[in-house]
Length: 203
Image (tube, rainbow, N blue to C red; front, side, top):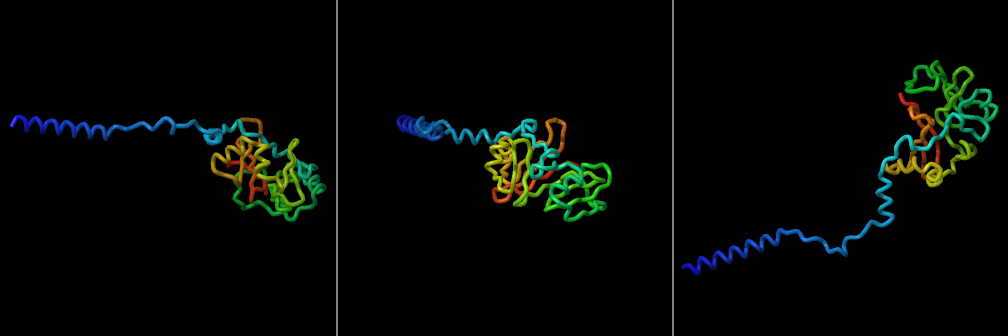
């Protein structure tokens, strides 16, 4: 009888040890653990957000249409450079969120671009690239042929931030070196090419 009890105890003990062994996690062999490749490491870096004050600046108001006339100018000067307006429509009754002017103004349209027109002053709201126009800021000239990859070379941090967010159709630039400025410049792309630039003023 004692022998039977002893045998049962030894069998139960062996079974318990087997179950414990089954529950122990086994580390992967060291040869299966490898350091990140340069590409994988760069992808981790890309996911970091870029601080707003580090984003590049595009001085929208001073950018030159066809290297002749700034986006903020007089009506006389603009029309002398690119021709008369296609149409002028009152902004009264429009749901205006943000504007360059405190007084009433009209919308001045030319070749798809939109300007705010107050008295004799014009301030561009949206500049649309056609096959024949360009926009120059400092040493940089942008046209409808400008690609996403080219803009990535010009404004790498802004493009990096856009790609962080999964975007390849729009980047956002600062419009001033002042950290307190809330407005921005938005560059829009279609099929990898630049099509328009918007002077964004928050409400």
